[in-house]
Length: 485
Image (tube, rainbow, N blue to C red):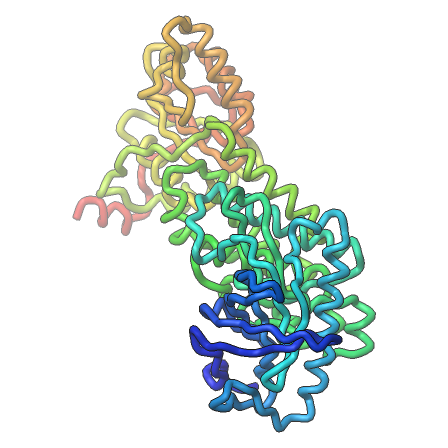
């Protein structure tokens, strides 16, 4: 396939004369600018005059396949020496017919651009579509919330194609126009790539795609692997473009891929749950293996809906709050691993017991730092005089978007805070309660029922009541030497 730089689009302000196919009507079009260049077409913004002399702005799609030997002549006509051009002409016309068909579907009427007509001239064919004052994704300033509303709208349209037996296969930012009034409505305007599974099996040459946004099995033309999951991939690629302004690369397709640095830029002040949801979406759309992607657009829509819901109101959540660790902490690698294994396999509530000064608090903090990838948030809480004061203090035990009201008693706020923790905590949260050095452990029952991991440091032996890990003096001579030097 030739490089895209070999193609020469029409220059801005070029005047071209085109004839409507099936009639003798001639129309004049003036090119405003290039919107995008796909595998088979170049799309322009253009102005044309109807037979009454009225001017209209349109999207004008010019058939100009990348895989054909085509040259642009000085008079703007295209000269093709490839026998494959006739095949592209047929596909282009079929795409026009499909667009008319899809627009008749009730679910797609407002999301598929209205066709003004199909034309010929300059040695090729053109389709003119109404512009409808839409804006491209690149020209839109979308908030994170709006990005997911756009993704939802596009996913609904792709789901509609699937319900009617079609695969879209060539979804890309250039094919999407947004309504300026609301991101919940989008306009799709390229349908050359839409095929049924049977059409693809009978004639693999109908496959049309854009490599940087298409699934690996599509780019490799492995027809037996191409299906709904291939469209799911393009939806993940669209989200990546809207968030990060880039297309997926090889590392994004790994099963356990992470996007922490990029997500950190966009979601520094958001709940860790938000970053986790986006990570899950990427992993379940961009996986190299089609079987490990979402099974349907409905599956993806359910996740998108939960994400949008999280933005519609200020939900309380835990955010990592850890005091600075001791710069002289060393060793304890065995203890850290043993604690982690206990929390993951035996209990979610563990007492770290040992004499004063043995290093219980530092061990707990370094556990949180060592295994931070296993937790969305880790909160370090210092025990006050009693558990009520410990929990109701927002300075000591902060929950984002949870504040005590002026008329709330200690008991009322304690109960409300515990109820919130019951709802927001998961096994991906860690609470460290430090210096619980009291004989009466009944108050700990406030925490034992929480669905998260909890570490409690204490000088008091509670081994007859709770799981307990004994923190002892360093035994490894190398660790002791490192500490004293």
